[in-house]
Image 1 (tube, helix red, strand yellow):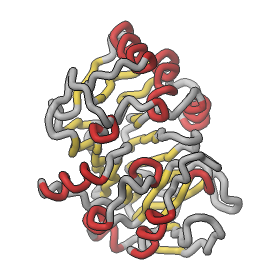
Image 2 (image 1 turned 90 degrees about the vertical axis):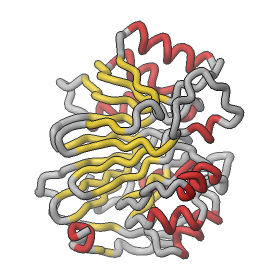
Image 3 (image 1 turned 120 degrees about the horizontal axis):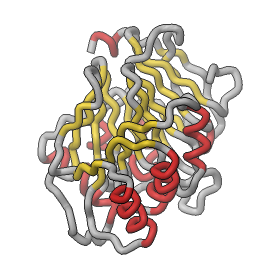
Image 4 (image 1 turned 180 degrees about the vertical axis):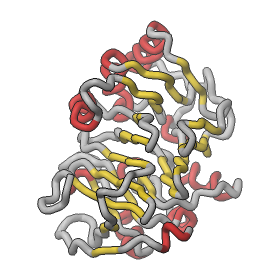
Length: 295
């Protein structure tokens, strides 16, 4: 918590967007990062690239198409064609579709998934592809903790038990919720987890308090309840949603809730790629679509 207190807040300004308040926490970018988290601007979907201090790479979801491949090319060295862990939070197309191309183009060390039964062709192709390439598969619930490197751990908060072979009516309810821990910082990754999952986590006494929150389901009103947001108590919330999307994400009620709780929020549809670097003195935020901020 001492690191958190050391964070210096700088108001970048009020932007006339759906978010009424945006905060940036800045520290010297020359300092080494213990963790870098990038929410990629891939349209209406989710894809998050995580890089650790020991040069491990994690890709959480792949978005709705192959845009993620080009994004990876921007941020991963051309000579490094390895992704140590791919996480598929759930098999909805806006999280899955880009992963098939990623698996084909990169050497993937392991995949973490829910194991739920889903007849969608893209999901079946994904399962066949990881099997054909000999990629190790971990099932959330059977695995509760993954050690990424000497400084970084991924805790699996949901599902609490394996769902292999089960047919889930609402795949969002089976979303993997994971908490990334590194250097005293925590990042809560929520997939599309709905209100009922949030309530279950709180009832179970899960430690969801986190430095940064990836807002569930693109800011849908089906998630991000007030009690959950209070429990997480993030210093920054990140939303991934497409420009002019037909769902109206993020929903105004979620934006208002974040604002009312004093939680600064950034949205890829307004900022482009969002990069959060965690270092000894705190964390920094940069955005590719905001002029004047270093990328």
